Image (cartoon, rainbow over all chains, first blue to last red):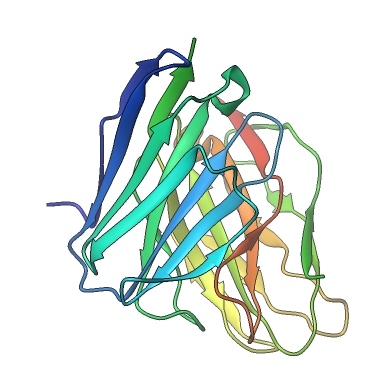
Length: 113
Length: 112
């Protein structure tokens, strides 16, 4: 198993759909993250969880709802998205919140039609 | 706030050429610095890191030295290969932060 696994790899959804992105880490890390990667823009941090508690939420619209049921799993629930939400959504994990590097999954390519 | 500035790309080189990708940062205190690489269709992979001034990170022939006096962490490689074609991201993590702050990324294209 690779370190951080994201499913699905690709997702196409209409603006009225509800879907979820899943992330699982097999590294025994304590922190997990969601980033959004759009063309021509820096990576945008969306959410940070440490030991299953949300520690950061960077003014993300409420149509994105994270869930961290345990330290190995992280979800991003999506509903009533907009076309501008189309992007690559990256999950990452790290041992701690201070000095450890982040380990990324391969991302979910989301297209909102 | 903290920030990372990378040179604009794309950078186009011939195989075996010397590579430099510039990165400067703004941060309070003593951040940790990282270079990540992203190959097409994949997530970001840690390439190298440095956690204090004058540290040199190295991996797969790439090197970067943490220069506090110039607030820089430039990425270098003596002889690039076609397989090095990817997007390279400089990032920092400050002592109070909870996550990495990334630069915009620099696309490297190496031709044979």
